[in-house]
Length: 183
Image (cartoon, rainbow, N blue to C red):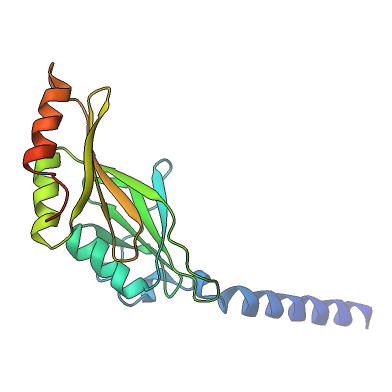
């Protein structure tokens, strides 16, 4: 009788744990995720970087990061309505995680910096899509930056490194010509 009671208790505990874990949206299978249109291919990383960005509307944010910034949605880490993660196919170890929590007051938070091979091209691309550059500058040590915002007011930046011998002059030319504030 005691053995039967222990088996029953174990089954009840297993059932409670299963319902609790599987009932949470962040534990759902990414293969069944909707709204992350890339084919399901697990992207698990041993190293890398994920920049968390708070957003008010996950769908609107997914449009910004997917369509405007041309990043790829990672279905392995897609748990609507709370989280969606995007990466560059050129560097899948670096990601931006979109965090939306409808149960807490929204506060924009973070400055994510994307390193690009050609900051002039990157600036022109988003300006053509209607996203203004807020500020651009030479940051020293061969680094050129251009700041902009997503639809929720989160500050982001493009960063280009490794300019030639005249890094500051080259960056200043690019920021004045291609990455100037406004549209």
